[in-house]
Length: 474
Image (cartoon, rainbow, N blue to C red):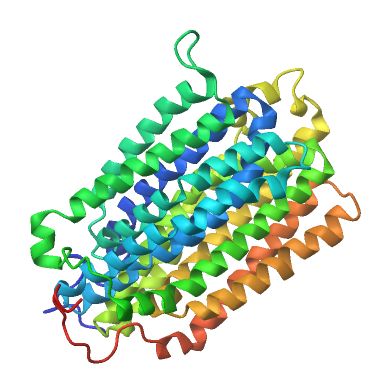
């Protein structure tokens, strides 16, 4: 039996226990819910503004998030290093990896600006929603560096398990977004012009700017400068290289994966309004529910990183069991959401589409939506389990595996089958979501096999011996 007495840990609860995981993950879930709610609210406002705007936002927004999330995933690697330094009690080193990600966020301007200016017209000029997609994608890309800065600074709190401050900041940002969405999308007659889909992108971006500025202010407080070295602002190439070595494969994989989903929505658009609208609704609902997966994944990564840093690998198994229990309970809860009076729930978000003149007034169309939502439930369930295993692998620095296995699986087991089976044979949209469900089950199996192989234990983020450095040495 593993002793849990006479030791320091991330929380007051037994290491790897369900209570510890909930204590760490719950604030992260709330923070993620607040952040994802901004996207969800955008889509809900746009669904009331026009169906074309909704479909354009889902399509172009998915590609935008490939780049947003890819760079954000890289800067978020600060949390992995913070968690291991925290577990090793090397508190004075914590500020340095965060600063390297701050610098990287600033450097990302050179990445996002060309995307904002040149890429959207090249991709969407011939699309049915081309003008709307260009507006949405270009606006989000212009503000992309602020999202990267936000995720890099969040790692300072996530890695130490101090996540409650993220909740307050995210909730305030969400309130700002809701207020600005209403004004920017619909306008105020005689006061403020109607901006439509571009207004939704600007409102969301302002929310991320607020979060980035607030987190930077708190990060630089005197107490943090003295205890965690947050004044070690100098560029430190060795630390940056380690962050890139661990984070870049995960970042590239995220981009490749989400670009795959962007291609999926392009394929659905090519098949007609029913396919893309059903997919847009399924994605909108899943975006709202992804808060649990995101928070649980980050909670697993945080605790696993601290356990690895403290050389307590035996507790990882307990952590994994706790995470799987939480995922099963969540899946049981959302199953009710997907099976009880689905039409009434969806009508709250898409009232026009369930009216007598709406697309889903047709019984067969509604049944396709209902079945697609059912498949998306299983997609969410197994995706959540896959993310749990991914959390442990990321904490261990086994990100090259995630890049190779993840990229090959999403394109080989999802996008290619959708094209060959659904698109080429012009099959109903339900076939595409069935393929998505099968894909995530297979992907979960690959990640689980990697975990049980134990090869992740051979990885190392922090050197066995590492000399402490001061702000002058950094």
